[in-house]
Image 1 (cartoon, helix red, strand yellow):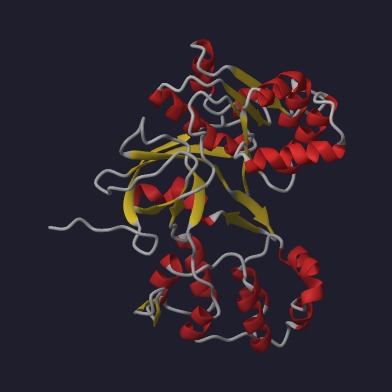
Image 2: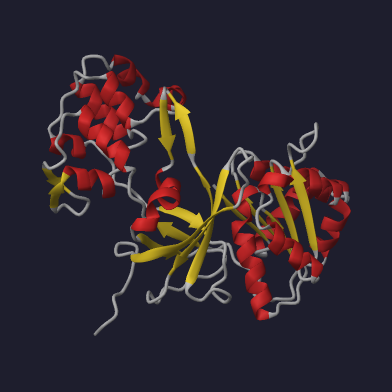
Length: 377
């Protein structure tokens, strides 16, 4: 019998085997360590890769939408692959039912007698205003706010986008965990406009995956370790951005790589948000993790971030770069990655004695040599 061939369109129905809270109850975030079994799949991944996770929607939100539209849930509609299925099943597994898309909003304007504001905001020059208006709003809010918009089940489905997989950085090495893949994820929950909201995929893993398959498929990346295990590496990963670097360290340990390893990790508070503390401190104790620099922003009056620690250790960081170190950054693209990049340029100028233009060219050269990698989102 031929084993099934898995792909992005035919993901492997994996099993969640570990769902462990990394942050303590006092933390402002719910950060989890998940382990998923790939046993029997034949799937392979490399450190630095991410994984497509195909979630299902929150059943309570599906119920709320069906109730608001006066649907029974049994009406047949096209599923994600076009085959007919009950609308409850389609809304659960096939369609995006949280953030409204432009497609949904344009359709709403044609059906509602109270949507002129939305029509105005859909013009290209009002994009920023539209984003501001939509912040924290979901499709269910528009259904309640515009009761004059009437849909048949098929029309409502036709206005929705497809439920897409979420990409998560892998926080394990398959050399150390042959049949498993690990994730480090913030579970998204918040309240807006009087309703409790949930991140689709993060709460799928945290709340619902224990009783359902977790469809997954690897997503290759260029965020790779140096081919030469003797190359020093500098890893900058605050919060869940530490995920690929846990994988890097596991991988280097598994193959006996001799290169130096330097990790910058940051979070809000040491007592509640020092993810994988025991693992990293053990690596420092045995000499494998050469340096571990920590930045806990709210443990003191003055905010301290990973870029603060970079500046404090600028001379040593420059020395590592001169020794051929590769530098990696993972995490928030909007602020952290920009600040880290600016700090890197500053260190090259102040410690390396280069002008702003020379520093810019130096960083460009690092990129061309494959020595400066960013996995930001």
